[in-house]
Image (cartoon, rainbow, N blue to C red; front, side, top):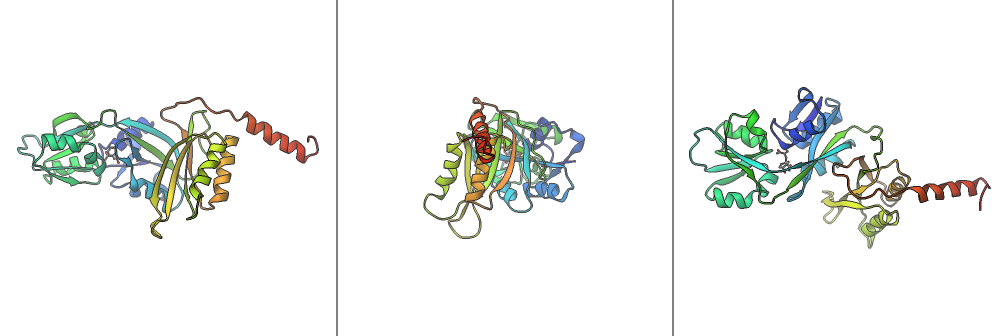
Amino acid sequence: MLAYFGPQGTFTEQAALGLGASPDELVPYDTVPAALAATRRGDAEAACVPVENSVEGAVPATMDALTEGEPLVAVAETVLDVRFSVLVRPGGGEVKTVASHPHALAQVRHWLAEHLPAADVVATTSTAAAARAVLAGEFDAAVSAPVAVRHYPLEVLATDVADVRDAKTRFLLLRRPGPPPAPTGQDRTSVVVTATDRVGALSELLTELALRRINLTRIESRPTKGRLGEYRFYIDFDGHVAEPRVGDALAALRRHCPDTRFLGSYPKAEPGGAPVGDEEFVAAAEWVAAVREGRGA
Ligand SMILES: O=C(O)C(=O)C[C@]1(C(=O)O)C=C[C@@H](O)C=C1
């Protein structure tokens, strides 16, 4: 069974199907932490959750749930184009309230101001939860994934709704720790570190990546929820833990920051950039091994 951030008809369900899940193994959970908790307990083999959107940024619920509790690791990612449909009850009349996930609402602010300026905007746990609530008569319109109309007998008031064209959301498939998927040459590695409060701490961590020619693809911070001013950094970079360069960098991060948590090495959804070769690292390690054994100098 595969848990996902539901209910039925979310973008996340679409993402899980796109990652190869079959519809009959999918089980919806109403929140991201609930989907991850089911995976931690072993009720689900894996969980599919949103992690970042190109307009609204990180999904805080996912970031927090990845560091609180037993480790989970990403084994795959996928990226979806995000355009919304506005759904109403058939023959529903005037739209006085419009509901959706906060991330979705943030992506259609201008559209709502132009087309439904008098409507009250209400946040729901997901885009599909909004559709479900419209069906139940709680709100008049839902800003939903286009697929939601297949699950809820609603009428489409508008399609292709998005303030920013080409908006995208990235989703992760997470499992309990196990051997990472084999490297493909176009992989991403994710970690979370807590930088200590001193001059240059974060810059030292990033320098470890730069020194090994590792391309940083994302850095996000979230408060540790402990002391004010203490932050965790979520760092994504190109490469796979199986590559000597990347393994070396991870070891360095862990030396700087003993609570470094590995969040996975997995194939990139949108491959790009030439892979950086590991030849120099392999050759240098062989040279050191030879020196140690007295075979080289
Ligand atoms: O509510 C959904 O349909 C989701 O899958 C969540 C989510 C998100 O968290 O960003 C996913 C894609 C869209 O950007 C809006 C909402």
